[in-house]
Structures are given as C-alpha cells and as structure tokens.
Image (cartoon, rainbow, N blue to C red; front, side, top):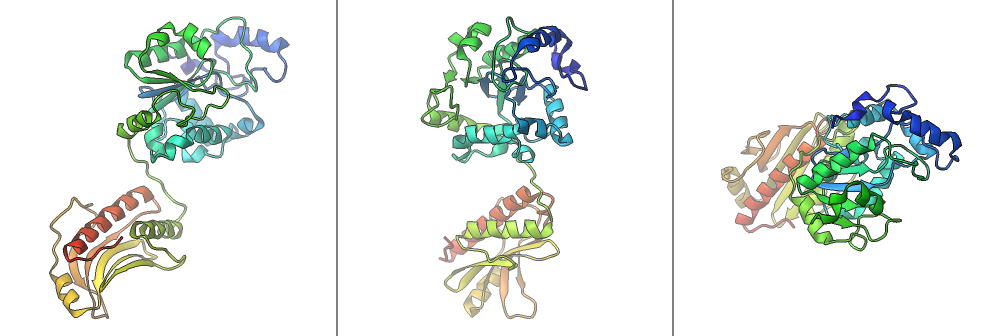
Length: 361
C-alpha cells in the first residue's frame, strides 16, 4: 500500500481526502472533548520505519500545549517529514529529540520511557530503534471511535503487519482489543507484549508485561548513531566538558576554572581547556624521578582518537614534564564527540599511570 500521508494538505484542515467526509460527519455532532482536531497535523506513526521495537497506541492526544507546539516552524517541519518516513535526524522518534523535549508529547513520552532511559540507554539509541503506531491517526482530547474505520488506518495496520514479518518486539500500550481485531496475526506473534495497566502506560519493570531486563538488553544491543550535541557557545561547552572530566576523575570542577586535577601520590592527571577551544589532557609531576619517567613515555597502546598526537613535552616557564595530549577542540559544535575524545585519552593515561603503580579512582 502506498503511503497516503504523502498527500496530506499543506494547510488546515489536515485531513486526507479519503478520510475527510467521515471525520466531518463525526465532528458535526461530537462534543468538544471527543472532537477531532484537524488544525493539527495527524500523527499516525513516528519513529524508525524498520524499528526492532514497536509500540501500539490508541490515538494522539490534544491539549492547548499541542496547539502551541505546532506553531513552531521547526516542530511542524519535523512532523511533516515524519509522515513521509524521511526525518533526517538522529532522533526519528521525534518526541525524544532534545529540541522538542518541552512539547506535551516530548514530556509525555520521556516520562513513559524514563525507566528504560534510566537503565543507561542513550536517547538516540532508543529513538533510532523504536516506532509508535497509533490505531487512529488524528488528535482528540478524549477518544470516541467513528462508526467505521477511516481508509488511512489500513496503512497503519500494514506497518504493524510488516513489523510482525520482521519479528519485531510488539508492545501494546492501549486499545489491545482494537489492535487484535485490526491485525489478527498479533494474537499469534511470539514477541507480542502488553502493559499491565493501560491507564498508566509507563514502560517500567513493574508495568511491562514481559521480561523488562530482556527488553533493556535488546535495546542496548542494537546499533545506533551517536548524535552531535552542540552547546550554546564556547564558554558553555568548555564548562560542560570540564564538569564531565571531573566526573570521569571522581572529583569536582569549580565554575570558571580552566582545569580539573586529580592527584595520586606524586603524580597528577590534569584536564584543561582554554578560551580558544584548545583541550589538553596530561600526566604531570614536580618530582625529579617522575619527571624522568614522564620524559620517556611513548604512546604504545590504544586505540586513541586521531585528533591529537601523544608526546612528552616540557611545560613552558616551569620545570615540569608532562605526558599527554593537546588538540584544538570544538565542543560548541560537536560536544558529544569531544566527550568521547576526552574519555579515550583519560582512559589511556590511567592505563599508563597504573603501569607505574598510580591509580586515579
């Protein structure tokens, strides 16, 4: 079946021509709480088209906050691209995209998926491997079924049938009876799970009707693309990186200081970032014996990022030898990558220090 949502009008009312008449008839006599809000883009599905985990829901909600969210051009464009399965982002499940965390959908989905995120699953890993399909595609405050299905629903049912064919894990959040009637093969699917409380559909250890640990392990094992996370400016990103370094070293960072230091006896591990964007990670000491050792170290284990060359060097205007790395960082443009670089360099220096009997824990 061709994707009918490619033909959605570009102006309200956002109703497919095949759905328009039955929805207009319904709205003519519907109360405000169940009226279908065609001034908002429908949300028949969102997420990765070939996701390994598929959530089945009832229909997209409506609140005043949703109307406000759709006034944002960026959000409107993302929702439109989602309808064509062509969202060029590391967050195809749009409500896990940090840009839209403040929307009602962003808040709701983050809350429902919080127990999974709290298990250490990266937001982009979750976003790139899950799909939500709504039984009914249009927004309403409360749900009341139409006298019969609208034609566009068949495409949603086909998405679920394709998920069954690829043996995806199916998690029914709401409307289990409706989904079973619409996609009869669900009843025989070996990887179909439901939530214990359809009124509170948080995906938690207690509420998930299956092995929650196995669910988390499945999500943890799936490949994903790490998202670049730019910060507002160089100063903000430098502070964030130094706080991250402090967490790595098990110490604290004083706001405004350009370095983080952790001592182990006569040896210290330092991370520094200056106002130009340069980042340095090194071992240093003021002790004579340690100076001679630092002067002779060569990088002989890895793998290490290619942004910097390991070397021993003498600090300017000070009788201190250091071994480590200096590179021109860009945390304001790709903070996540600089976190990864820093983690790798710190781990390398910790290995070097352990060979000499020094431990930074």
